[in-house]
Length: 117
Image 1 (cartoon, rainbow, N blue to C red):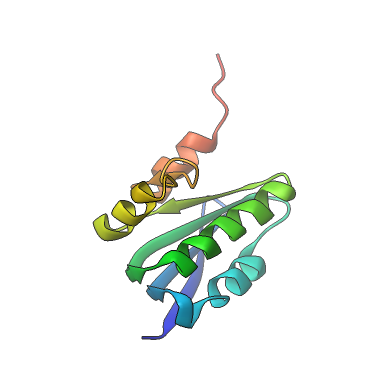
Image 2 (cartoon, rainbow, N blue to C red; image 1 turned 180 degrees about the vertical axis):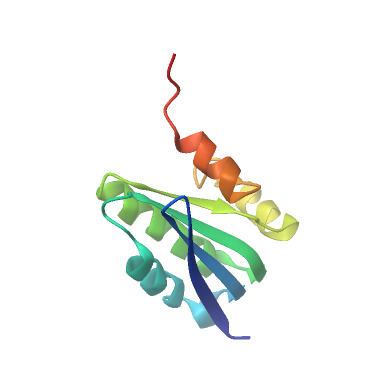
């Protein structure tokens, strides 16, 4: 299956919504799209995986690489709308927490805001 992505934004933060499979056959495409969507001024990218049907170790590796690139630039990448199957894969690999999985983009944004008061 092919993979495609749609770019958008929420509260000025770029959101990349992904559809298809994150696997060996599509490896590299998401990394390229994430680089294109990255905003060095916002320093946050939300990867919305609502349309991801399948993820394998190559797809997980790609997510980790995207996160590492953002961290090296002083930013962050978070995941939203991750399917139960993908959550299971991330849990088995011990990556659900390090990759910062949220139910919604709004929840992800709220978690990035510093607490004041």
